Length: 612
Image (cartoon, rainbow, N blue to C red; front, top):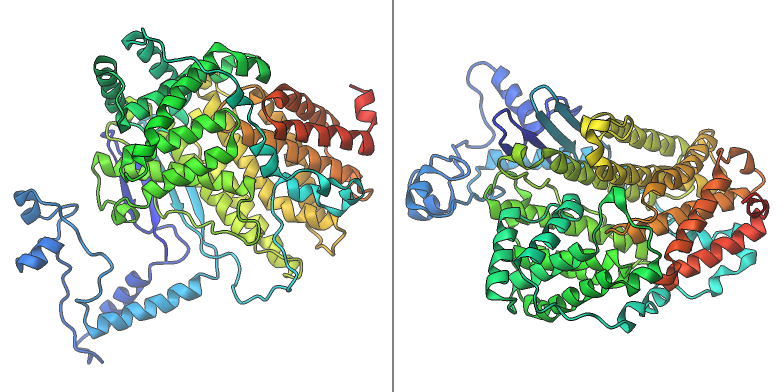
């Protein structure tokens, strides 16, 4: 059974990660129950197995055959010797037969419990004391594995290409259009423009400016770097020059992102073609190309800085609308993370700074690669693995002085990623012959989890009430709101698919369809503030808003669904057209989406254009 991980901030301002089951969980600890039963039996008891005391010593004490006091994270012997102290947490070799029998029974109970979902998300903050915590008990499978699916069963993928293949659009023959990857590979406009050389007078002053822009507008969304260390790298490269090493590669990527980064509230309305011609972009490309020349040396590395370099390279490619190239880089970043210590999955196994950075970059690479892989549909012939790491990154020491809201955002985003994966695991295993009541209960359960997450956000990150005092966190709230809408879209996706295809549905389907179509309109309304802001998620925003517009047009083409369309759906579609028009010169794929959307409007709802 997966542990519940609680990330909390104590009154002293220090943070830690506990791996313990919550007292409020619906399912009590099997171990605790077994202990209680034994304790209640008075007198002597005849055991079926000979019992002996099994002490789990650390590796060093076991080798030296000395007594271990089992202190964590390091026993007193290892602490005095200055050696690394490791415990083999899952080693059962020292257990007696009775203990092994009990563990086997617990394993059997674990398998039974995996048929149910017992998930709770709590994110809270005590404003008066500056104390907060975030907890998540991870799910167990939402559906029995024994259900047999029809031979022709296919998962209902959630992306634009799937929507265009719906029967409601079959007469328009969108299947003849180029596929997504062909369109993305044809985007070579960025390679045809000459780049500027790195300025000869590039010195400490300019480096500090670009670094600060990066920290203010990029790092805040993915705090994978230690600011003090990065500033040391900046001073070293400024004084000694850019070398062919990982530190120089990292700084070049930071300068590239700093060159094109802008505050969320002050995004310049520069058309995409103008951006490609701008000095800022050409200068950023020069930094990026210089970083690329150093990345080959990092391929055989497996440290934190190598993973950081590949991840930031992926962020830059995403910000410049090159998603396929970005995905390849994210995969490489994630490959670096696979060589990190196996203790990552064991809370409190290591609490040093390097371990915290390993956890942070691992989670960041994981969620970035996964969301891009899903949108690109890189594994279209099967439902790919959505399993997530069983840990939260450990916040840094002295979090209070380093803007704790940024870390609350980061952990809240991870909690939503985990919820989204649970929903996807259910949706991609769904097929229409499953009992409708079971599906309704699953959706209601996901709604409850999302509401719990929403209600437990700290005040500074609230997406329901806007506080002028927290205006500087508007970009963080914007991203969380977008991810929440992603989860809601997944919840109601299959209800819309079944209704569009006129499949037999349950009594609650119409309600879920109404909610799903409302999410499509809300997505456009919420994202409108960021339509013209260049960032890591710009391409994904273009795709998700276009997908919402296509779903609304599909519903408008089904007579039985027209009454369920929410107010403002026509206006939402027009806003998506304007957004795509803004970015069309930067990507052939964006131009293709614009062409499809305009054609559908002419066929399905030409009156929208008349009222424009």
